[in-house]
Image 1: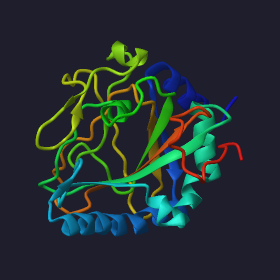
Image 2: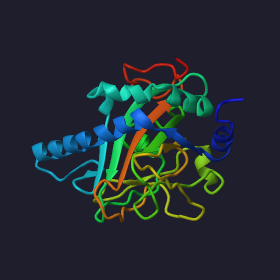
Image 3: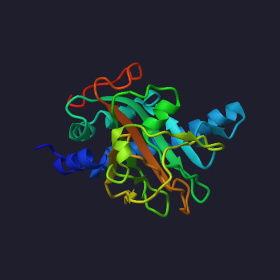
Image 4: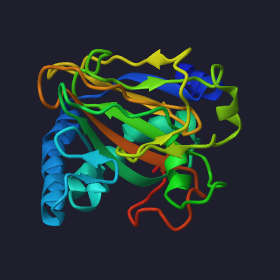
Length: 251
């Protein structure tokens, strides 16, 4: 029996699983401490170009800061931890490779929603192969994440059977550049997390065919929703896109 047998069964059946309390202490504080740094990096990039948006990042409203571990190697302490290895064993098996990391931040009051999508919809929508190997997205909230301030929601396989079979068509939304793959909220599961300083956080992991959308933020303070995301895949995942620091989850 694996360490997370219940999560393994749910993941196999519905395409997602929640791992309560696994992100805590030094690892959680590491991610929190680096998050603001990379939001500032994205603002500087927009300043340099004289724009207020790059891709799906919109100044002061919603940020997607990519491949942060390349600039801050300390983040690999979390990415290649035994905790993440245990999550990969429960979902992908003994062999898994890291290939992408990202901080996601939504601002209070004026934060933008993010439409229903499969992460693989963005792989294909941005020029990747539609037949790429399956991979795992790990969403790790760094602050309280509630329905009021825009936490993630998931549509299980049982509610959207077509998503189990592969990637549904996605349409790019003018203005936000979001890719929308689904418009019906029926059956959505809201993942709420208490992540105060003294409490461990949790990870919500899903395979990209499960449609996911964080909701619009309605909190009263900036940084009302911060999360770290990392993507893990099997040995044949997205050839040519692996980080040079990839390694086996089983270590």
